[in-house]
Amino acid sequence: MQLTDLHGSLSDPLLDTMNFLNEVTARFPDAVSFAPGRPYDEAFEPSVVAGYLDAYAKYLERDRGLSQRQVGGLLFQYGRTKGQIHDLVAATIANDEGIEVPPESIVVTVGAQEGMLLALRVLFRDFADVLLVASPATSASPVPRGCSTSRSSRYRRVRPVWTPERYARRRTGCGRAGGAPARCTWCPTSPTRRARACR
Image 1 (cartoon, helix red, strand yellow):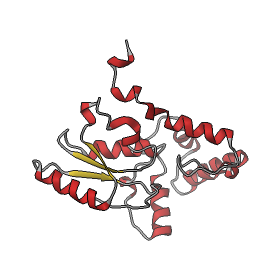
Image 2 (cartoon, one colour):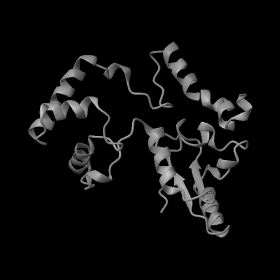
Image 3 (cartoon, one colour):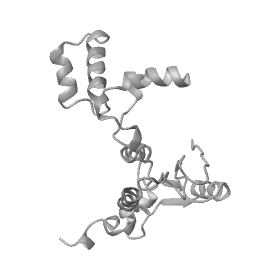
Image 4 (tube, one colour):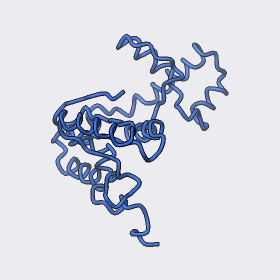
């Protein structure tokens, strides 16, 4: 099977963006790059991991009334597809931000890309829907990941927008072109620092 027989994004050079950013970080360890959203290396302390796991296990036993066998199952077996710490996340959001969120409505993912993919799968009813993406954006957003490549007819309705005015025109135009809802994703790490919500 040839690469040209597969999805067009697989041969898009933009797929190497994260590898390039990681290489730059490795070659210049003293440099701080805000592009990939990497955690700060100096904050890593492997010795504290065991303590955190022990604290979580005690929480499961004390606050949720689980047996040691049940705790072991939660830690080492396949778990909920939406994640296991949803109740703790909800409590943290309520404490830090004053926002009450039902724990069952929280989905914990392993990273931003998985979260964005799940969100888009939920928001898009069919291929008639349109996605507006701020540009420039994070390297994890749909545009730099190759979804807007012209070789992919499946993702041709991904539209990058550079200014609020162009965003407004795009969204209005999408509504006129058959009433297809215009979805929007925004990136807080964009150099423009512009964030907008679509309803």
